[in-house]
Image 1 (cartoon, rainbow, N blue to C red):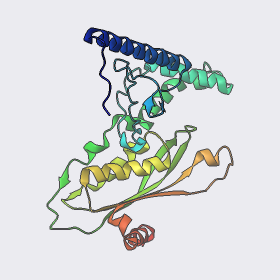
Image 2: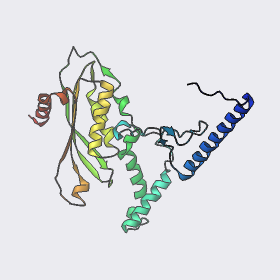
Image 3: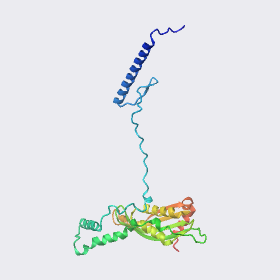
Length: 273
């Protein structure tokens, strides 16, 4: 059976097709407006989109991934420490304010020169902010007759200040490493300890900083750092327990991977004979 041919002229059929297309576009436009006003996302119904996607619409940009901040130990010398740094006169005025807050008279004879002395002392106590620990280890002695065994410098005394209360903590640092390309001057390791100790610190951070700089500059086969200290913020205030010792360690390379190396390090540190 054959379909009955359309007897209408071609122009009439074209006009009807155009009218049908206009009606379809108006319907889609109406449904898209309803969807946008309701705050709903276009969905599929009966196999077709309920709203037409507008290619000219602005696409929301994907948020940039968050980058975790570098650990404190990675920043060995704070950037631009002189930026916005108070003058000596401003620092001395701050000390006078603290003296008055403590309940004393900064103008009396015994305290008259105290602000100047405190500021001068702070310049030395916190001098580590202006020192570059990396530069201390740049000179390596390679003529060591093939020596590649452990190098240990123990009982390095240090004095630091707790960053939470600005109260001193002090103790001993012990550093050991297995050299690869050479050794560094022994006094330089003590200077590295002083560089980090002469800043507002936590013992845990200071221990990691010492290991970090030795690892990055000397690139030894292994590093072991142990710091033992007494914190006056625990002895003078708060719980007020004097004589309590805190020990922190960092093991890298051969010392981290081999428990026997850790035992050897600890034995050498504790053997005072």
